[in-house]
Image (cartoon, rainbow, N blue to C red; front, side, top):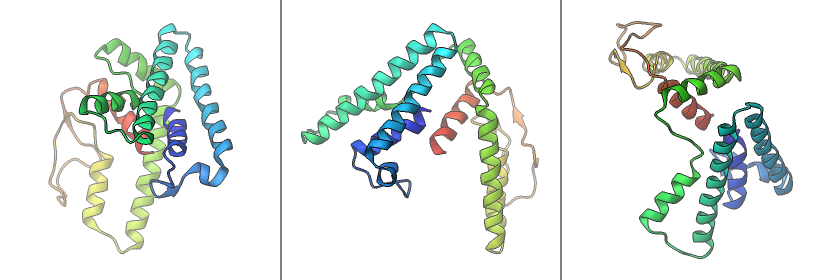
Length: 202
């Protein structure tokens, strides 16, 4: 949800015209409706945090929202007052603008994965990736085919994260398809990192 509401507000504050090549929401629906919709989604996320019945969930999410707005406020202040921040100030601002709570606590990571599974985040991500893969392969076929691009899609389809993966050279027909062998055990952190990257890209 943060990936849905934050960019909408950010585009307004930055007077953006396009986001990833597409006209920004407020240029289509107007500023008032876009702000209202973005704020509504933000509070939907707060409601879901409350529904977890875990005091830390609400506290962490609220603190991250505050940090997000503090970081954005710093950026706006520098821009509007023509101030060049120091390197340390800029690093602090970027950290505040990242809506993420990192931890090395494996139990907490397992709990997060349980929540992601319960709310269907992994299933949603898998469906989106399958649709993108199908669309890409259809487009390649329409353009006459390209074995190298198809091989890249195969490797992306079999990607298991940052673990020790047995790799085969691009263009090679050897290796395990459709399954790529992974030496060792996938860590709990990998699916979380994958989900984070996918949410950002989608």
